[in-house]
Length: 485
Ligand SMILES: Cc1cc2nc3c(=O)[nH]c(=O)nc-3n(C[C@H](O)[C@H](O)[C@H](O)COP(=O)(O)OP(=O)(O)OC[C@H]3O[C@@H](n4cnc5c(N)ncnc54)[C@H](O)[C@@H]3O)c2cc1C
Image (cartoon, rainbow, N blue to C red; front, side):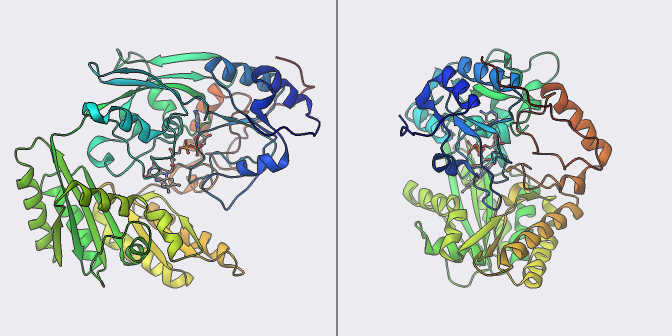
């Protein structure tokens, strides 16, 4: 499968090759380069090797072997993570789940599917759409990211406002613990299994407690009807007020997304231009869905709320093609920043929805102080902001200023009573920022949970929690001479 290499494999690589076969282990530095980082590209580290298991048993054997030899390891899906969760700190073995990519079982009567962790999110909806079903969590990266990675990050998406994030759709998990033990938790017949909510604990644990090898997910019936609207505003404040006003009038839209002027400039230059009016300060992309009866009333009520908030224009999609274009324009928004800036840094933070106007004003001040443009494309209904700091890494000092500006946005959200991540996770990027919202004692309590699952700190070390110092140290076990599996 992979190109043969001539360099001598070390004992760890040979041990891995014994488990999965020589063609499923990468260890040449040229091959490893692609695994230096995920979609958070400001930090890079070289893994020791990358191994591609084909089954849960392979994963268990690999983990037992690495555990016995005290070699740290990281699970990896598609590498679209935006907080550096899959980035090696140096010397870890990456366990790539991309070859475990099957839809194992589909039960439309009981509305669940069983998938391997490398199965791509959007493939599930594509596989069942013609029968009138879909998988609800829809990160903008859904065409590339894996459901295993979604579970690890508790991924969200535009329609999570009404339908909930990944954790609300996971019914069961099979995982390999950091000692190599295979464990099954929950399942299709156990929507509320007795005892501790281990699915809840593992979902969003960012690959630090276990490696997910099988997922039972809930699937939903496609709503009978939907309406999609674009509302254009001349001021960010009016658009922000409209977000709170829509929710407080009792309607929960399926999606309520916002883009500001800079973001609109980018998406209109990219692959899916919509022809948004010139000069607007912000737009809202709003979708309502459900039973056909009443749907027109809902979208009419929303348009009325927008009018009370000084909207310039409200447009309703007239065809499915038009609606799809609007969504493509929104969902490719991050990548579209490449049309107006050589580099961008995505932040992900949450605030109480009612504080949108003041926090967006604070982000504007941060932009002016840093001399860098900041675009905003985000899940406004959830108060889940994504300030995108635009910069040019070729200019001396700009990368550092971008990181500072991005962190200042994060702090502004924490100060407004929010959180440091809504859906992208903490990973490597924001582990020190955990101190903005947790006390040392709260962090230590979470690290104690991690030690129960991951006592040797071999699974994804150095992620999620601040570097020990002010907190109790997580000791990593000493390596021993390599022994076989
Ligand atoms: C353009 C773009 C748009 C995005 N939009 C969204 C969005 O709307 N919503 C959202 O939530 N996210 C979004 N993301 C972030 C990202 O796509 C998600 O976090 C996704 O869940 C990561 O999946 P992955 O397969 O790429 O995981 P990876 O990046 O490979 O890994 C992410 C983390 O999960 C761990 N992991 C991966 N697989 C497993 C496994 N099987 N078992 C245990 N741990 C595992 C890794 O160790 C790492 O810590 C976006 C990213 C990009 C690049």
